Image (cartoon, rainbow, N blue to C red; front, side, top):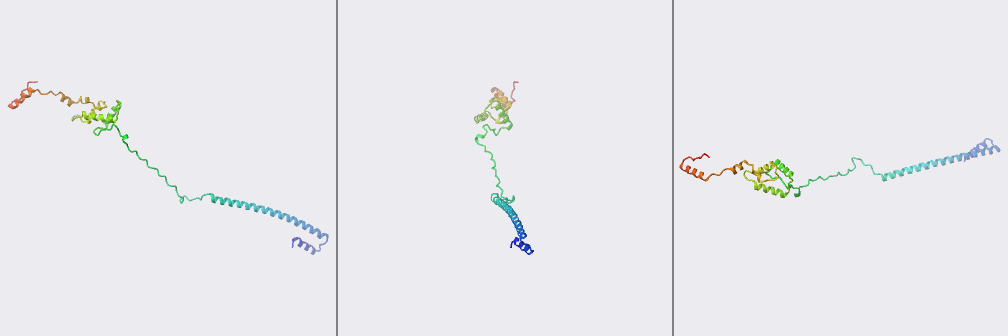
Length: 209
C-alpha cells in the first residue's frame, strides 16, 4: 500500500469527508509528486558520480597495467649483473729492426767519452756517419795501428787534435817514434874496432865524439 493510500485511510478514520478529503488528497499527491521528482534528480546525480568514479578507476587500472608492461623491473644493485670489465691490450715495445741499427756504432775498444767527443768532431766537420764511412774508419785504424799505437790510443789522439778521422800524421808527435826515427845508425868502422878490442880483452877505444 502506498503512502498516499495509508494517509487517506487515516483521514477517513478521523471523520474527514467530502471536499476537505478531496483537497487533502490533492495536496498529498502534489507533495508526493514533488518528493518523487527530487528523489529522481538526486538519484540521477548519484548515478553520474558513480559513473565518473568508475571511469577514473578504469583509467587508473589501465595506467597501472601499461606501467607493468612497459617499465623494466628495478633490480637490486647487489644482485644485478655487472657489465664485463673492459680489458685494454698492453702496448708492446717495438723491436729494433736492422734499419733502426746505428750505422756508425762504437767499437768495443773505444772509450765511451772519447767516442762521444769523436762523433762531435765529425758533426762539426759535417762528415757523414754512414755504414760506408764507418767501414773506412775501421780500415784506417787497422792500417795505422801498431804496438805503440793501439786503436784506442789512435782514437784518443785524433779526438784530442779535433780530427774526425784517423790520419798518419797523428803519430808525428810521439816521443818514442821520434827517438826511434832519429837514432843514429852505428858506423861500420867503429863496430869493427870495438869487436877486435873485445876479442883481445882490451877496453874499446873512444875517440871522444
